[in-house]
Structure formats: C-alpha cells, structure tokens
Length: 378
Image (tube, rainbow, N blue to C red; front, side, top):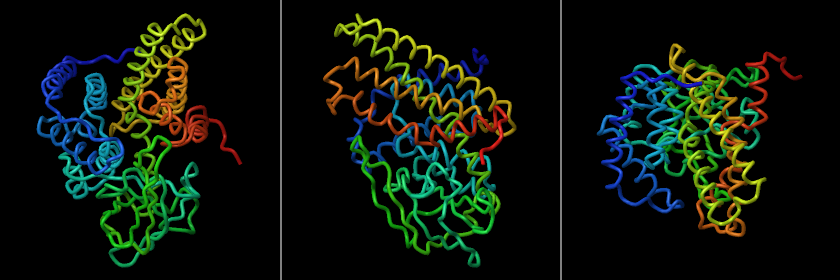
C-alpha cells in the first residue's frame, strides 16, 4: 500500500529536510558508545535543539503520519538517534500523553520534550521477562504513598535516568493480568540500587535495579489502581508500532551498502548471496508498507495509539534484522570478526531483537489470539 500524504504533510517534510541540512553539519562529534553520561548530555542537547526549532512534540502531539515523516527524514539525514531519550520520547511520554491526568501531562511531558529529564523502563524482572504478567515487585498502599520492594532487570538507561516507568503488583490476590499498576518513579528516591549490565557488544545501556521499601507518591500512578496492565498495553503498542520506524529506514540503507560492498569485493558473483539480498529487499519494502498501514490504523483510532498490527511488524522485523546482519557477515568475510566495524556491532545487537519489546513467542501468541481469533492455550 501507499500512504497518501496531504499537502500540509509534504510541506512539513520539506521544511524538516531543509532544517536538518542546515543544522546537522554544526553538531559536535558523538561521544564514545560506552560513555553513557556523555551520551546522555549529547542526546539531551539534541532534544533541546529539536525543541527550540519546534520539532520536539512529534512523538505525541503530532499525528501518526507526521511522526512517521519525522522519523523517516531524520534517519535518512543521519540525525542523532533518540539514544538516552528513547524511553521518555517513545514509551513513557506517549503513554502519559494518552493515559495521564492534566497535571501529570503538565509535570512530565514538558521536561521530556525540552531535553531536561531522562526516563528508564522498569518492566522486566528475573522471573518475569517474556511472561511480564508474572511480575512480583510489590507495592502496598501506605497513606498517600506506595511502598515498593522487588527487583527489575534489563532496565533501559537506569544508570543515567531521572525517572522510571515502573510496573508493580498492587493486588497480589488478583488474577495475573489484574492487580498491576503503572507508576512514575523518581530515580533519586532512597532505597534504589542500580547495577549496570554490560552487553555482548560492550555497552551498558541496561541495568539491574533493586527496590527496598521505596516510597512513591500515589499521585505518580498513571491510570487507575490495578489497571496497569491495560496502561502497559498502550506503552507496548507504541514500542512495537512506531518506535522502530527509523530502524527500518536504517536497515534499508544498510542493505544498499551491502550490495555495493559485495560488488566491490567480488562476493556479488555468488548467486545465493544475490538471492538473499533480493529477499531482504522485498522483506524491508514489505515492512515499510506494514509500517504505513499501522500508521494509517493509528490515525483512525481515537487517541492515535497503534494497534495489534504492531506485533506483526515486531515479529517479522526482529527476524529480518538478524537475517540482514547475518548476510552482512557473509559479505564481510573474515572482516566480520572486526569489532571496530559498525556492521559487526550491529550484528551482535541484532541478536537481542527477538527478545526485546516482547519475545517472538509472545508476539506469535498476540497475533494468534487477537488477530486470528485462535483460542488461548491452557
């Protein structure tokens, strides 16, 4: 399918493209990938630049189509990725915009947009990763506060975050998908311990987080008490529906670079390799069309929240990305073992995509139950 753009949307694209061409050459160099305090400062600086130019609110105040154009054009232009702002801009911010009170939106959305505060994600636990509804971190009500104890793992950007979107169990007697609440946790609250986790690629954007009698104001709960699972589905809809748009554009660019590299080093003569590159080209063209379809569906919804089509996208994109970088390793040959090459690090990173944002097994369950109407397993 082709997504039809209005004259106003095409004008937005042209203005954004011209602004990017003007501002990007003057940006400072990016800090080393393993220096997260420096990367936080760099990412917040870029977000302030976007804010001052009037482009900061595209992740929730703009239409899904405008958001798609923004993510596409910034990736094509080579603009900085959201980086440490990932959770705030693409997960917590859109969720608060859709589900928060007027006071909550006023408190948290502005600092995210202005590049003043970083958020992390406190969803997964050691015994509740893929099975998120099995989370055990407890929060009991004590007057105007929740007292939270438990642990989280794979907590994105916890080491440099100001706030955490935190899932807790507020009713341990309720069925698994009930009795959960979505809280905004200040990361400077007493009782929080953060231990960075180093990935296979050598970076430390994840951490373990331990919570020992941590007090969180009741006013920091987004949505009703015990209604956190529904609110979380809104968060995950954004994560699976539109958060990967820029990465699809990047993968299509890498695919073209792979074809050129294969021609230069002689591997293009292998018909099997050419066939794989052709299949990947079709895969990513189809994924881009699916992205446009998901955006059209979000446009038609009352709040601009992506639907379950995001799970179809996430499922296929995760595997296509791994196949892309496996093919890159074949094109590079022995150079695929060189950790100083970007494609090598991207290949290591791609291994996590069938786990991150919901495993492929979970996505298949969602597709089977919510799209195909198959019965739940027992």
